[in-house]
Image (cartoon, rainbow, N blue to C red):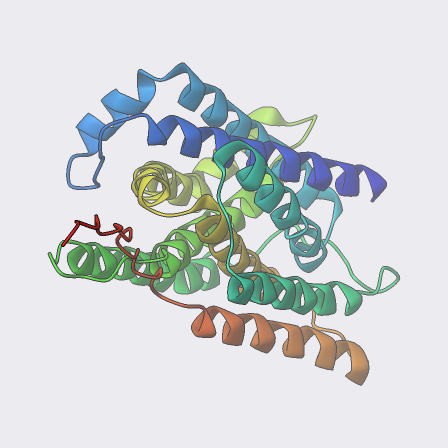
Length: 305
């Protein structure tokens, strides 16, 4: 289990570093949009800084495979969310981004909500599941993918309005978070096929499962959607929102899909359900728009009478 904790902490460092490097690289590129995916890929692949950031994210996915082999889904998500603190610090130091007081309170509430989920865990009774019914996985994942794509498209349509208010990116974060949540469940499924023996049969079983095909969808779509969103919005807000949605989606629906039972103890059950409700409430209450920048005040030149 301690190997899983170490892998989760390493994944936090890799994810936070990758997102911040990609955001910094995107700031130097022309405006990108999901309506021109080929141009977006051409631009980002021409940036060494972006490539380094994407390699950091890919390494984070690799570490996540090790986590899901050794920790229950809900426990893993509780550790993953601690990376938000590192992300906000890196965004402040490397990107010069500042969070508002309301957003800092919201991030604190999100951390408290996910701490409640962690406190609901019981090492002696929590088990690591290795399989889930494919029909149930698809029933959970396909509507989430559809909702994520629709929500992102809706945010894009509003962004094209000439007189729109500047958006904070909450909608983008929720949309990408849903795709990454599906991706996280697919990684959990892939991890169950990792073995040191019977590699051929394990590979054949993996190809008969929905997991590689879910990753093939969420990989390219998540890449394009997240890059356009990162370029337009602050990483210090959009990534925590995305991470929270991903963690809650994976912890709640992943626990259900893979049969990792909810706590029987009333207190632990209340902590897990209460933490979920609190995090969702905070997401809904986050401001949807950045304050409109005020024009600089120009001092009038005094002229003699």
